[in-house]
Length: 109
Image 1 (spheres, rainbow, N blue to C red):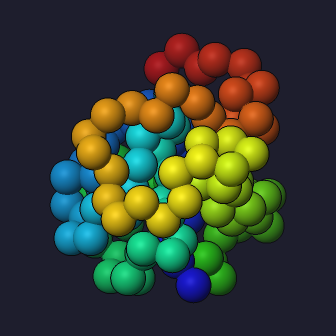
Image 2 (spheres, rainbow, N blue to C red):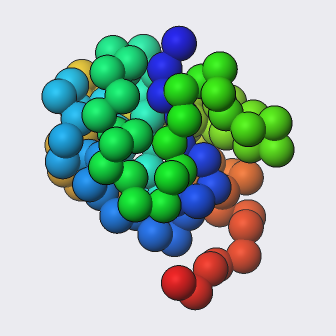
């Protein structure tokens, strides 16, 4: 299991989680961040620094947000970003988002 970033991150992308992650498993899309489940070591550091409470341990993802478990995993697949298990982000924004995230209205925060 891994941690999961949910909809509270969309159009926020604070990046505190990216900076504290010891294994660099958090990647940046255009509108939100994504956790590579194959790379996450379940340390929970990201949860402690997220200012919008967008990150949950997979079993604790609220029922209304459970689709984000698949969204985080599918982001890395060939149909979305093609990143696979790349071994850590390179600091660049991946110029795509999962189609369900991309389809959401932009939030003015």
